[in-house]
Image (cartoon, rainbow, N blue to C red):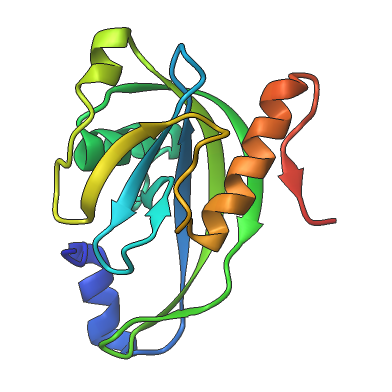
Length: 165
């Protein structure tokens, strides 16, 4: 997974110190109620599609970009379902980051877009659609949480986004 240029520039100044980053996550649900997940290349776990925003990038625009870059699927970003903070992460090179994550409920722009799902970059080993009652065993903990927030709000459209109070 390449490090974005702006992160590399920051790292050249701060080294491996903790870096606070804006992240976005997509809970993509197709017309059949299936969920789009990617098997992460770094951990082997299945996860919702996520990434970091470029400087000045709107969250919904950045999230649609991330989903397209990682899976080849064009999505409509429908609604914010959760605002959370991740635990600090330490990468193999010693870099430390922590993320403010904005999780959104999304849908493919069309059935053809959903059918186009494939591994589109080096961040995933596999990409697939799963029924909510047939999810893979090796789900990332953060994905379990994000799916819970999103599916709860899908079941109750009047519910606002989850956030810690």
